[in-house]
Image (cartoon, rainbow, N blue to C red; front, side):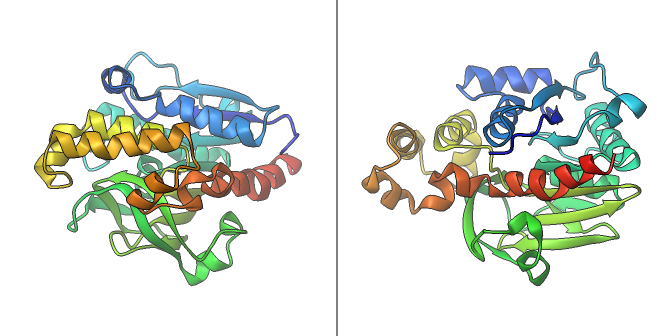
Length: 288
């Protein structure tokens, strides 16, 4: 447990209509999941939330932004390839401001892609298709093996995943920390302007209940993509996920899904976020 009184800004990546749609499907707000994750690691922290995808959102800049010890960006159903979308441009500019102000940043999925573009890299639709449900056999690169974000992590592990875009060209002054057979960039350290971002393509903030809800929300799309044959398969699959949320010791459900402590143990799954706070945020606060 990290006892320091830290102040975090969580950037909600979804716009209001998408947030409402997911809520109807039984999924928590992405920013709520991030808030809960950060407070589970640093229970004395203050966690504010901003929604830059909303046209009427007030977004802090300059000195006000610099008052935060760290910033964390959630996932989103937006795509950075949609460069004319104001909801996309606003979040890229916010990440650039984190870099300018030297605010240590972190995030998953959408955040990795936003950070990449903000620092001069490139993101494209993954030609291998969507990675959905579980990202398998994430492996640490040579840089990842020596990186503090992965201290205590296995060299190969499974994760929650849901994305179609991927980093195709990492930005200058970045290190690829993890990869798998679906995406060559599953994690990055990005150094840009005055700031550093540690970002991952997968979702440490999810649990099996949230993944079940997301799959139900994306039912028609996932059947069309061939992940499931029909609605009955989705029901059976998500019921197993729900059963594991209610009882993580359900060996039968875990065995059928092919998952273990990488997914089911909160401490293991959230280790990257913990290490971000311990090894990037806290040293940064001491130098202010």
